[in-house]
Length: 67
Image (cartoon, rainbow, N blue to C red):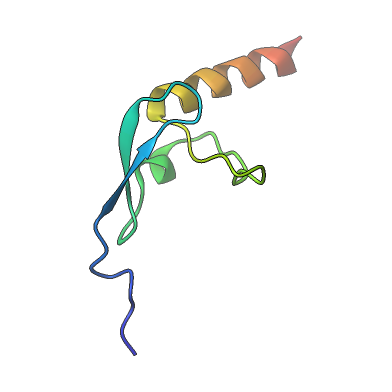
């Protein structure tokens, strides 16, 4: 059986936080796999965050946990 995602192109997204365009590689590991901070997949119909917004959110949540 052939994996349909094997030859899938990079998906172009607009960040749900700031609107910046970035890519998600459907045929291999995404850039977010290398990030230490993890978020659950959005359940409200929104899409992923760009690297900058994900890191900002990680810093905000880390600061809130320290308070």
